[in-house]
Amino acid sequence: MTAAKCEEKEIPSFRYALSKTVAYIVLLAIVLVLMNFLFGWTSADDMPAFLQQYSGILLAVHPYLRYIQAAVIFVFGYLAVNAASGMVYTYFRQATEHATAATLRTITRIAGIAVLLALMTSIFNVDPAAALTVGSFGGLVAGFATQTILTHVVAGIFLLLSRPFTYGDVITVAGQTGTVKEIKLMHVILETEDGLKDILIPSGSIVTQIIQKKLPKAIMKPARTTLILDAPATSAKKGSTVTFTGKLFEEGGKPLSGKTVGIFDVDIGRDDLLASGVTQADGSFAVEWKAKKTDAFDNTAEIHAKFEGDEDHKSSVSKQYVITIETKK
Image (tube, rainbow, N blue to C red; front, side):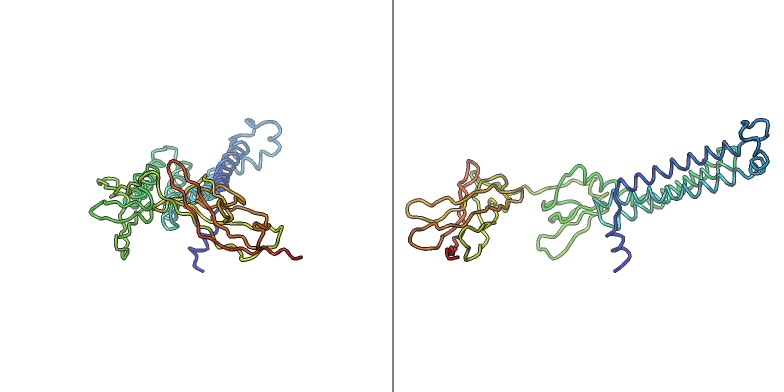
């Protein structure tokens, strides 16, 4: 298994990464304040009474305080930068593929190290202009190195949030026509009409182009529906629970949710309703029935599912199945 696949499997939670980042920053602030309080005195007379007995050690460390602070800032700062870059990876990994999220993590790490260098430089320079120069230079290098990537990433985020099109839409953009297959931060992937090629269009190019979206074929109301009943077991013991499953969708393949589906036994004149249930968001249903004899003349039940229809959808009936009811103990 490659390193990329291992890393993709073990994605820490966003809250965990955020809490680590905040914890490192708070801990760094506490340590710096404590060090400044203990070793920041220039003479024993300025120290509080309870510290004067340790004045020899504290004053001996004072000349090296800047170096110790720099080391502390580097250690905790580097840990905070790594935690922050992990937080960025976790956040964007939910919306895009591993490669793009890893690129953003690297960008965050570079920017964080540039800020860390600026903080360390400010410790050794009374004039803060030097620290600003280091930070600005690091930011400039990172900006030039990632300018194109950031352009497409920002455009990809805009496309994910604004949703000018979605998966399955047929669009024409940048002179290319195809079905939207994937929407990533760096690219939008279109599948050609013949299904033989994928077209990768950079996200930054799409937001500046005119997008033509093919409208779905209008469906006349009430729309036709299709009801599928999965084949049940061919026999069931009397008193046992039989679960009937299937799916209901309208013309064009759109699943119908919240619709009542009945399980009927074929009878002379009028079919007998055995049980009913409501379809889920994906159009599927699961209806339970306690097996019993439905015919006085034999031990079989001729089962089918039926959707009665409504003002927007026509009724539909599934395929019929025969179940033998076993009455012997």
